[in-house]
Image 1 (cartoon, rainbow, N blue to C red):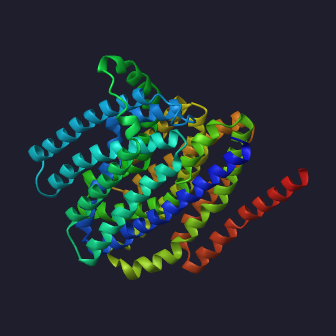
Image 2 (cartoon, rainbow, N blue to C red):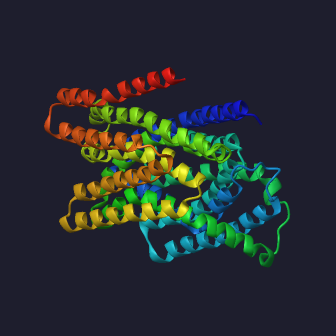
Image 3 (cartoon, rainbow, N blue to C red):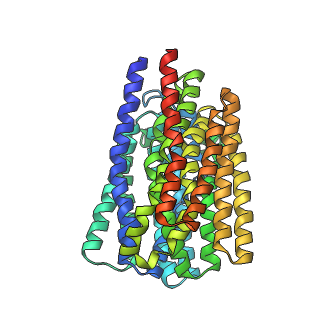
Amino acid sequence: MGKDSRGNSVKHNILFAYVVQIVSMLTSVVMSLIVPKMLGVEEFAFWQLFILYASYVSFSTLGLHDGIYLINGGLSRSQINKRSIGSQLVYMYFFQAIVGGIIILGSLLLFSGGRRLVFILLGAYLILFNIDGSLRVLFQAIDEVRLSSKALLLLRASFLLLLGSLVLCNCQDYFMYIAAYVIAEAVACAYSVFHARDILFSGLLSLKRIIPAIKNSIAAGFKLMMSMQISMLVVGLGRFFIEWFWPQYVFGQYSFAISLVAFFNAFIIQAAMVFFPFLRKTNEEAVRVFFVSGERALSVIMPVILICIFPLMTFIELWLPQYYESLVYLVLLLPTCIFDSKMEICCSTLFKVRREEATLLSINIASLLIAIVGSICGMMLHSLEAIIAGSVIAVVVRCFVSERHLAKCFSSREPLILSLYLVVYSVAFIIAFKLLSTWAAIAVSLALYLPLPIYLIIIKQMHKQHQ
C-alpha cells in the first residue's frame, strides 16, 4: 500500500470516527443535559455512581487485550495468529464471568437499596464491556478502525434510542437508565463477537499451551492498562473522595460538572484511536511531524472550549437551575479539557507507538500522587476546590512532563512553549471568570486567545516559504 493510500485510509477512518462521534455527542447531550432534567439530584447521583465505577471495570482484564493491541498493532487480520489470540481472549472472558459473578453476589450480600441495584448491574456490565471493549481494541490494532467505529456507533445509537424512549415515557427511575446502558452494551457486544467469530472460534488451545502467550500479552499490556486507568483516576479520584465524604447531592452536582467536561473532551479524543496503527507503519520523521502539528492544532482548538462556558452558563441557569452551582466546579475543571486532549492525542499515542509504556506509567503514577495529595487536603479542609485544584494541577503536570520527554526525543521545544502559554491562559481565564463581569471576562479571554491562531497562521506561511 502506497503512502497516499495509507493517508486516504486514515482520513476515511477519521471521517467515519467523527460520524460516530456525532451520534456519541447526541448521546452525551442527552446524558449531560436531559437525564439530569428527568432525575432528581440524588437519583442522578446513583446514575453517576454507576458511571463512575463502570469507568474502571477494565482493571479486571489485567491488560491482556492491551498487550494484544501493542504486539499486533499494524498487522492485518490475515497476518495475526488467530488461534492464539482467540484462545487468549476466550480464557479472559471466562475470568470476566467469574469476576462479574463475584460482584453480583457481593452486592447481594453487602449492599441494600440503590447501591445494591447499582452494583448488580455493574457486575453484568463488566462482563459485556470487557468482551466488547477487547474486540474493539483488537479491530483497531489490525487497522480495522471502521469496524471498531461501527461497533461503537451501534452502542451509542442503541443507548440513544433507549434513552429517548425513557425520556418520552417521562421515566424518573435511575435503575431504568442504568439498565438501558447495560442493554446497549449487550447489543454492541453481540455485534463485535459476530465480526470476530473467525478469531474467537478458530480453535481453543489448551490452557497449558496458551499460558505463555497470555503471560506475554499481560506483560506487554499491563503497564499500558494501568497507565490508562491511572490516567482516568487523576480526575476521577476526586469523585471517589466526594462520594465517600460528602452528601449524595454534592456528588451529583460535581458529577454533573465532570459529565460536561467529558462531553467537551470526547470529540477531540475520538481521533486518537485512529492514529496508532497508522503511525506504527511510518518512520520517525513522520511521527515527529505528527507530534509538532498535533500540538499546534490542539493548542488553537481546545481553548475555544473555555470561552464556550459563557453561553452554557445562561442555558444551564434556565434549563437546570438546580445544577447552577455545578458551573463553579466546571470552570475550575475546564483546563483539564485542554491538557487531557493534548495528552491523549499527542503524548499517549506516541508513547504507545514508541513502546514507552513504562515511561507513560511512571508519569501517570506521579500525576496520580499529586491528585491524591490534593484529595486528602480537600478532605481534611472539607474543600471541593482543593480537590479540584489537585486534579487540575496533576493533569497539567502530566501533560507538560510528557511533552518535555517527547520534545527532547524529537528536538522541538515548541510544544513546551505552547503549553506554558496555555497554562497562563487557563489561570487568567479562571481569575477573569471569578472577578469580572461576564462581558469583561469574555473580552479578556478572547484577547488572550487571539495570539494562538495568529501564531499558527504565521507558522503555516513560513512553512510554505521554505517549501
